[in-house]
Image 1 (cartoon, helix red, strand yellow):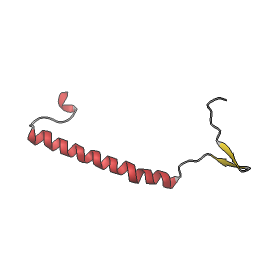
Image 2 (cartoon, one colour):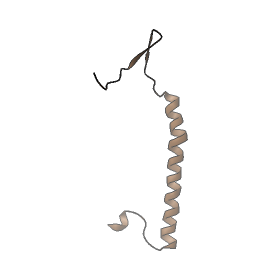
Image 3 (cartoon, one colour):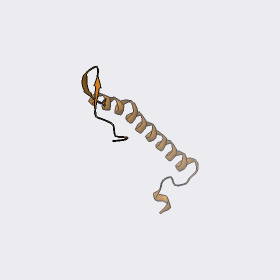
Image 4 (cartoon, one colour):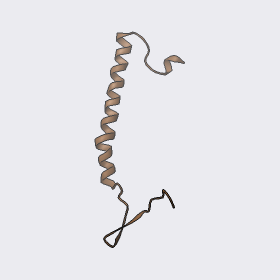
Length: 66
């Protein structure tokens, strides 16, 4: 079939599976990308909340428009 990747590759006469992330790969991805991203966005949200609340004296959030 055109465009369909085989899941088994032949390397020097040995059939191997395609490369994939292991448990440690997913754990490293969460530690080094996921957690810092969430913490940075949470810090940005807190800074914007206090900026809008006390500096501009306006509402910050989607529920303010309801």
